[in-house]
Length: 597
Ligand SMILES: Cc1ncc(COP(=O)(O)O)c(C=O)c1O
Figure 1 (cartoon, rainbow, N blue to C red):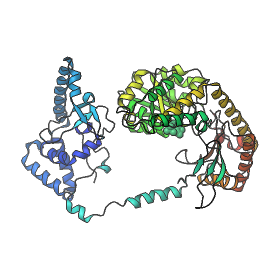
Figure 2 (figure 1 turned 180 degrees about the vertical axis):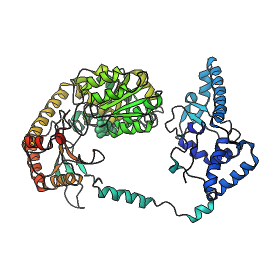
Figure 3 (figure 1 turned 120 degrees about the vertical axis):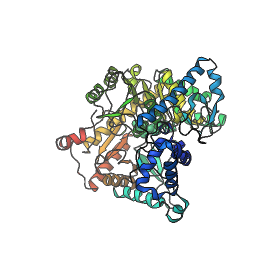
Figure 4 (figure 1 turned 45 degrees about the vertical axis):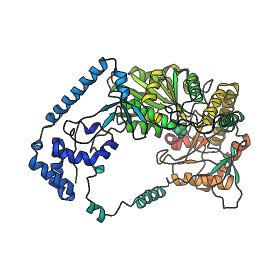
């Protein structure tokens, strides 16, 4: 049965958890006194009232006894609510005008579901004119992330059940469900089997392969060609020393969230160094860049009034997640297509807040956007820009600040996000930008606030990585990496492999079939001790499966030759043909060269 939509101005401001936790109260009390609920119940009862004993009992009593059940029009209901909220606003305004506001708010402290105390500047009592005589005590945190409209998705709406229903009904088969979903992934070759590799300090880019080991078998030395430790900093002697010194001096964990004993001088120093690297007023660190992207985009989009998001079609899952969760209108422009971006921007009035979000170096095709042109067009239409430099930080620009620094446009970038987990050889993520913006995310971003802060070892290694990146050594590592990338790319093309052309350090080889891509990688590993990870759905679209190769400064010419030779063999072994670059352009030009930046 389709459950009718319930448009209650009170309930629609609550979080999902709040509604769930208070559902029985809301249901029973609402049935008695609330005209919205009684209308809702009547609609249900006409179609399936017998299913729920509770419901039918309450409905019949309320319909016979309560004058509240006169069906009010939506406008009448709104009027009652507006009056209540108006009174509330007036009370708050009076409170504000008495400068005692701070004390008043600070006196109200509310433990949140995580056991922390939220100072009530962010909270307010919620009262529903119809439910106020009930024991429901609800408070709202402003900009709460889980604000929902009750019953938006009727499939998820669960009606109260009786104990007899519990006795006769089988519980949901969780394991069957999980198994079905896993089998579906296996059928379409998108099921992932991780290769287990043990990095040996001092051997980069070689490692020990551990996945196919019998109990007593020896591990196998392999050459890794798919690491995002792009400059090998993860094993740099200075990084290792920084980690050892930090653990000796401060121990292992940080001890808390940033607000509760988890901010140390190392946290503050790292944020200052990141801000300085990107020539921004301020920076904020997160436990990963996934969290940084998700939290920042979500928090901004949700808070900016009437915000629209313009998102590059190739954006990383972390940005998509934040955008999707915010539920604001989004407009997807073709990958790095400035004209398309402008076309979409023109349709939104200039005064409306807009966020344009994209990557500089694309993680999977290696393309690099025309950054300045993207920023200019976004600003011309009144947008703020959010730029993911995850695959560029440490690798481009004089100090390794990314494409923004290389192209001398750092001053035009509003919000830069980056990772400490790839070229910086550690873990964690960050955003950098104006002080007010970072302070806003610091104050409202759930993914920043409600999690344990990063440990001293990580902070120390990240600080060291940035120091190296800004030094001559960093520049020389970047130069060597680029040389190796050029050598590898030209040898792969000469060998007749379908290299997807890109101007960055990422070299993708187009396969276009998940099973084949996986087979190629397994053959490379098992026969040639070379590790390249196949990239399948959902990381890339189906039909665009590829091998993604990343050369580092530490790969030698000999290793490059071994890789190219091995690839030629496995390519032919699985039935694929090698073609000259010219042949490929003629035959599959668009498929292979489509990704050119
Ligand atoms: C483009 C892009 N953005 C963000 C992230 C997330 O970064 P992190 O690994 O620090 O969570 C990744 C990770 O692969 C990425 O490729």
